Structure formats: structure tokens, C-alpha cells
Length: 389
Image (tube, rainbow, N blue to C red; front, top):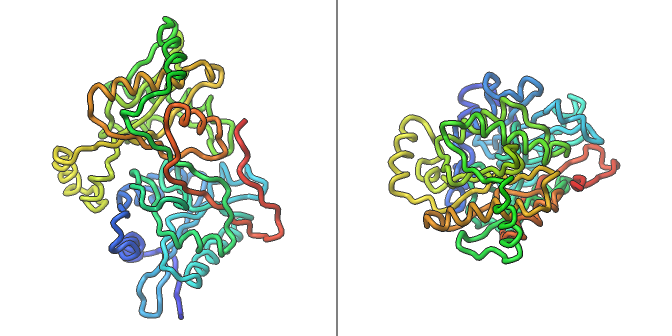
């Protein structure tokens, strides 16, 4: 079959790029579209700050009838690309029919572009931005409902990636528990010791002071994960932007901090899962979509919590703080009978300490994603992502 691949250049190309998933997932009830405006932001050079230290290019693939059957994006984050053994770029927003010759053209094209720019490897599917969205490929449990910003893919994508030569760089574990599940007694005892200590306090956020909490979040985040290659330190502007974007859907009960003598040492960050509403508005938060969103929010109960992140300052780990912050959260949420269950977006298998924490407070793995890596030189040594010690 004859294929034609070309870069996204015109407004019509752009539309074709965004419209392709609708045909790929036609009839698939598990698929929920990404917010169109969020995806457009990724490719907006004036808005996405990653363009100040990186580059990006997109392509669409057509069959001989000029029907779009595939798409892909490639990007280079110059702040991160050279921190690996092989200079490494990224690929993402991959969609394709179940045809290896078609997917190979897409992969060949991004590989050629990245090679010309000095890259020796590519990670994917990832985002030209933060790793809390559009990151990873589902490899286990394709029917578990996705959270907002999570990639979704049919099972055959795994074969398309692996048959081309991509290998799993790290797994991304999605954890789950019911809100009303009992908390282990051992955890409760240690948590109560923390909560009874006057030096510690747990505080839920207030929307009228988000700037302060964003900075507290950044402080703990950077101390907890900033030294690992998969978690580059967060700057002030990014933390402020993150909380500003979350503000419309923040439930103050779901984000809390632990302070030791007024110094932030831990946080738990969750938001209501809005994907049931996103599905109803077909992933478009334009003016009409916003009006629909506000109306549907009154009639569609949001029963799931997305646990985006939990972090504890290294000097305060193993003291029971993880249990204290979750016990406080659980008691507050359970008493209001508002939510049914909690999904922790993903924990990399390079972070076994964090996975242990979630399992110790009653979570269990329910689905798995993976970030793959392709080494352009097949003779080069492949290594999995290093473990956080």
C-alpha cells in the first residue's frame, strides 16, 4: 500500500491531526478524548515554555485515498536530552491504524528528524511538557477508566512499538483503592503519634491563597524527587501555573500539607476526576463546552479522586507522616460521603519507595503503563531507568 507522510504545516493539517483519534477510536467506549485546548497548548510556541529550550515537529500519514491513518510528534527538551548516556529526544501523540508498515513510516520519520538534531535515542510516548499528562502507553488493563490527561490506546499499539524495537524504559503503575476501605491498624498507630505531636500540623489548602501553597508544594517536590533524572526540579513559575490551572476544579478537602514547625514537609494532592464530563462535551472546552461543563457538573456526580501526587521531604520519611496525611484525608473525605474511590495517576517502577507507601496505606495496582525507549544504534547498550535509592 502507498503511504504519504507530511509535516503539519497548515490549519487544515492541524485539524486533521486533532481529528484522527475520532476515527481510530470510533466505537471504543473506553476512549475519552483529551481536552482539545490542552493538546493545542502543547504545540503553541507562544504559550508552551518548552519551546524556549527545545524544538518540536508533527506529521500526519495518509493512505493512497488521502485519508489520514496516522500521526506522530517528535520533540527535544534540551534541558533533559543530554542527561542520559545517549542524547535522548521524545515522541508522542502517536495514533495509527493497525498496520506495521504504516507505524514504521511514522517511527522512521521521527527517528530521522531526531538523528539529524544529534539525538541517539527516543522515549515515548511522552509529552512535550510535564509528565503528569500524555505520558506512557497502556500495557495492562485497557478497560480501566482513564483519568483526565491519561493516554489511552488499543492493545495493538504495544506490538507496533515493540516490533519496531522500542523497549520498556520504565513501567508506570496505576494504583487504586475505595474511599471506605479500612486503613491498616499499624499505619493508624504511627499516624496518630504524628498527629498528636504539637510540632506537626495538617492543613488543607485555601483557594484564596493558592500562591503560598504552590510554593510549599514546589519546596517539598524538589526535595523529594528533584535529584532523579525523571523528575527535574520545578521552578516557581511552573508551580504557580500548575495550581492556577487546577483552580477551577480544586476541592479544598483533597489537597493538604503537613508542616513541622511551620516548615512544609509533606503534601497530598488530589483533584476530582472530571473525565466523565469531558466525555460528554467531546473533549472540547470552548465557550459552549465550558457552559456545558458547568451545567453537567450539577448533574453528573464526580465520585472518583485522582491522586496526582504525594511527597515527603527525605528528612521526614519513615516517621509516619505518610500515614498521618492520608489518615487525615481519609477521615475528612469519608465523613462527607462525597467520593467513592481514589486512583493514583502513576508511580514509576524506578520509585519503589513511593509504591511501597501507597501499598502500605491500602492501594493496589490496577493497571500498568510503560514509557518505552528506542536506541537508534541497535548495538548500543540498553539500560532501564535507574532506581531511586
